[in-house]
Length: 95
Picture (cartoon, rainbow, N blue to C red):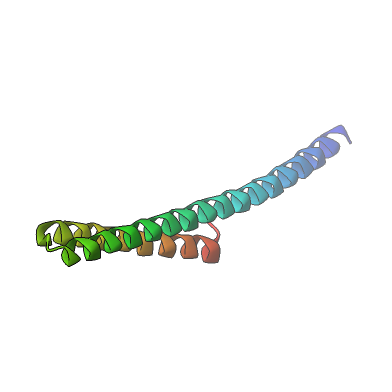
């Protein structure tokens, strides 16, 4: 009887541990998804700021600065799209 009770105790402990790991993994995926979505929002704001700076520089005739700011805006926009896609995949797949 002792051997059977030890195995059943081990099974119940392993099941509880497995459930805890699944809950923790879901929480970690949610946290990572939230962080990626926040990073996408921040980069989108930075891209808008850079685009505005490019527009102002072009308005005043500084086309080299306008080109540099426009390039920076493009890079930030691409990073924002990448982070948003990563956040969406994390939310959908949960890993």
